[in-house]
Length: 288
Length: 170
Image 1: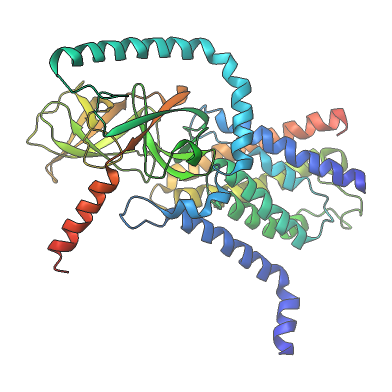
Image 2: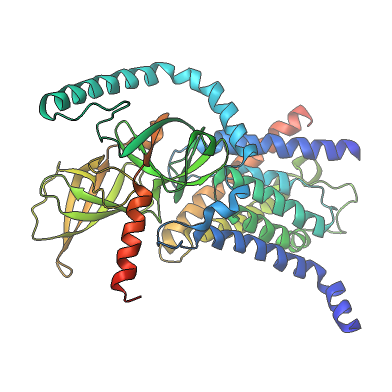
């Protein structure tokens, strides 16, 4: 007994060091542990050490309130441009498809709901980049919802508090996004190598496909995170890997992550229904 | 004494805000990623109790993690740096030990001492930080390059900040 006390007295500094490092590593692993469906994580449980908490959230909000005045002009221009685009889209939809009139209809029918949000913090120079948005649970935001900008895919909500939410950007070394070639419809996976915020990598496209520089890449709609057909980017460079019969495709992202000010959070109203159905199907076929 | 404590608290907030509001958003390149906030830990009085420094480092790191969404990576790096601090101080100790009033500043210890102390500590910090963040040794040389370039930038910024603070006597 005295031996133990003597040991702690002698080595209290080292013991303290190990204990604190243990806490740190615990937080780190908590942030990286894969969730039940393989892509989400337990990030939410450690909310007090991410920027969804009210301290960091309100600091970023105040700062963004001040600095946002300096880029009002560009923001306005971009909104006007987007309005024009939406007007055009709406006009062409009315021409071609006769959908039954529904209140608050959007181009995706009633399946997806779009909530506008301001980006109050953002980074592009880390190996794992996140955005902080000025809306949270109170505005209907939940984990696992997709985030898009007027120009394309941005990321997925991974943590929410009452008034703020943290988004894992596609500029994140652990992010995998199901994508497809607009022409031909072949599926692949978008990942980010962590080097350049303008480019991502599209893999798993078989070499039997013809892929040309300039081809559009869009979201596949296979996950419940994004609607199908949201722009991801265009093909910048195609490199075949002969041993694997697959291409590695460099994609120029359509979203400029450095200039993100406003985004839309996409909530899939049928998400629960779909995941339940898929889970049941898996259970039924696995023999239980 | 109170004055010294006040100065340290002020330094904590000033460099925290500089770090998360300004430096986090200057992206010249992925290789230049300075973490100036460690200056707060480096400027704690030399005689500060080593266990206390360990705790201060832990909470400083966690605060930065909160803003960076890095989940304990900065805390781990700061705690490691604080653990090495007594050894580093002993290694660079002048002949006849430190004065009881010695501060790790240019005024008190001179520029060469500050540069060697600061760069040793900063590289210890950055080494843990960037390797934990990469979480693998797969891109070893890229990570090493990031550590070296960011480390040099951090040391430069710290020395510059010390020079500015010295002039304004804060």
